[in-house]
Image (cartoon, rainbow, N blue to C red; front, side, top):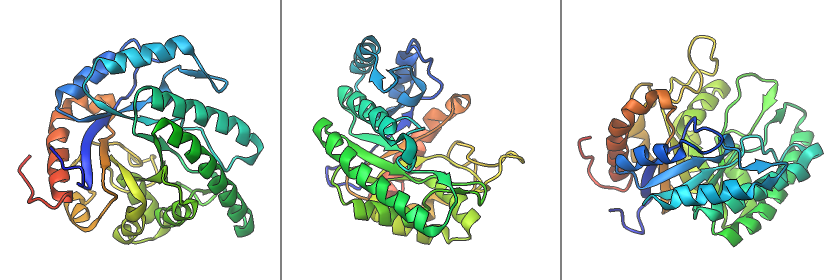
Length: 296
């Protein structure tokens, strides 16, 4: 078992494609638990738990009961559409975020994955103003998260064209440092960073090294780092080793915050690979924590 001071404290898998009424969530948790994973990331965005920013009480009770049956520790992925750069609808985004934080607290989640702002590309002063709004909102939501014992982990995304803007990993590191809240941290998605840095002509490892000091949560899945989906590329969420991300060389170079959790994000069509990915995740944990690599 990892020590409390270990950089990587545990690994797990994200739920995927669960029915919105939660009727198959217990089966998914059982399959994840059977791999020996320590954690599960609940993809709450795909479940019907919140309506108009209001938590559905009966659904919440069912979620709590299902999660309590398992020995897993939990993290949560909040609503994908929450966007603190959407100035016109900011109060609604805050309401949904608060609901997701409350649900995170209800299942004892340590982390809630959160997407950063994505907006049409525009002049620098306009984008700087939106970044300032996002930072202010993250400080506010960080205070709410603290009340539930949850960290908001801001995940690096990618763009596929120059008409859309979101922060690359280097800029996102600076933004989180400026937020400077103990309940707001970074979430490194290796595939998203691979796609974004290749699209922007940035050095992949240098970008990850810049982001790593803010990181307290990881999303692990493979790809080929090509933005467009037209040729079967894009953010493929492949099993580890199916793409060409240089995992071992990266993990030997990167240092994250102590207690970071590694979540493997696989679509259900790849769940035949869960056990193999669990073995690989254990090896990655040992490598990242400074131990000699063990065979998967």
